[in-house]
Image 1: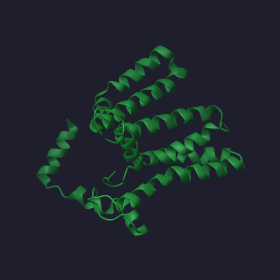
Image 2: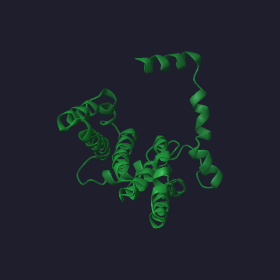
Image 3: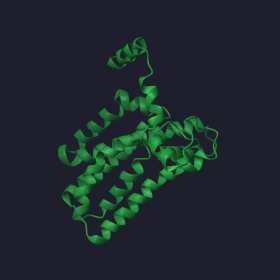
Length: 212
């Protein structure tokens, strides 16, 4: 259990560790299987979202188009955070759809937990956070307080970073112990300079590669 590049991905690290404990399975295969399983969950969620709108057969087509697309397929076969991030976001959208029909449904609490824990896969998940605010106001006082507790529980996964930073040799991004160091890490302050260290030639090649 190391400390990966900013912004840390604690949920992915912990889920990968659990998968690596699969008896009799090579850890690399087990962690890759996490990506495959996550892509399958995302495809199921897409089917669930489409089923009530376009019917079962077309929902199945939509789910298969996603699952066999180049980008999802490529991420389903490697040990990266993106497949798990997609699964978490897709599950959140399923719950948002349910809450659109019934705003005071208990599914709101599950949505809060998924949204806060989902930040531990990739900070891209923060884009769904604004949807929680109007839904939160729709809830009763007790459920609002429960939601705050669940959000703290999900965000508590980030305690993984200072805990593991102090003990693991697998951390090349510097200490993550003090409040300032944690903020620098989560905002990619130390990592940000690497994003602009390319030569013009390398930058042009990178852009051309993305265009292909």
